[in-house]
Amino acid sequence: MIKKPNVVVIGGGTGLSNLLRGLKHFPVNLSAIVTVADDGGSTGKLRKDYDIPAPGDLRNVMVSLSKKESLIEEMFQYRFKDGELKDQCLGNIMLAGMVDITGSMTQATKALSDMLDLYGEVIPVSNQPLELCAKLTNGKIIKGESNIAKYVHENDAKIDRVFYEDDASATRRAMKAIKNADFIIFGIGSLYTSIAPNLVIDGIKKELLYSKAEKIYICNAMQQPGETTGYTVYDHVRVVEKHLEGNLNTIIVNSNMKIPKETLKMYHDDGADIVEIDYDNLTEYTLIEKDLIKIDDDTKWVRHNFLKLGVEIYSHILEKSQ
Image (cartoon, rainbow, N blue to C red; front, side, top):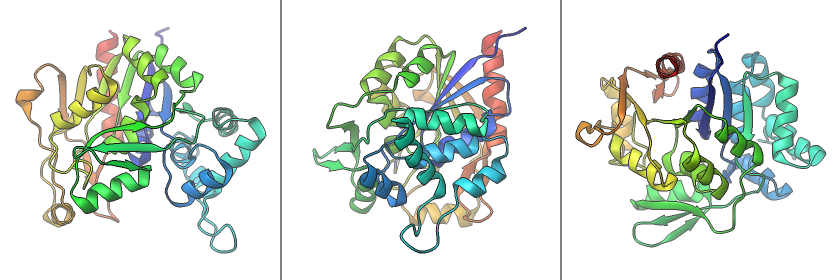
């Protein structure tokens, strides 16, 4: 019997959930290491009230890995319409309650994951309610994940790096998953507020640097207003490697530059554009270039087609595993 490869995916936000929806259909041992630095919206309120790591991204990942996704999504994403719980998400409340019962976010996600019989393992990167900080290129420090994206967008500022003021400890489950990984995937998602926050935690950084696993980065198809305005593919790669303090092996990029005019105008109006592939700067990497996007029917924004992406990643894993 062929051993299923251990695949670790690191990130946060909707990008990570979308990626996992594609990967869960393939025979791999899947682990998702998820950022817990979100401090906005209903997630931020629960985090502040109960001094827990942000549950929102963990909730979304659990939904994406569920075997009965439509049913679990309806339950976990339900938001109360009035009363003291108005706008709170049921899944977040369940995670907060399980933290109180089990003693940590790691145990809370494990308990709920076992109950839901997920396709993979969901692992918070830390059990602490971390506050993300960003140092801008002008030296200014911005504190709070939600403040970072807002500030750089509104002030046309550039981020130099992200960090945590207080010592941030990685969960043992996250470090173990990296240690046992055959392939480690970074992305899709916000470069500075979903991916990099995981890489600057000492235990994670150490295990990633020691790991012999192939390190794959999936680059966003479109720039993110404020965070990555004007960025090329290599600019994204450089940011990941800077925070990782190590090198990536394989870069997956979208080759379809035929974005509908209506959608492209939306991005231009917001100060963003297509992420250009600067081939001359990518010669040291294995470059996988495929048509991987679709246009969201409701929002008209560009999204990765999770099924296409899953096929390309698994094909690459099979090729490298032979």
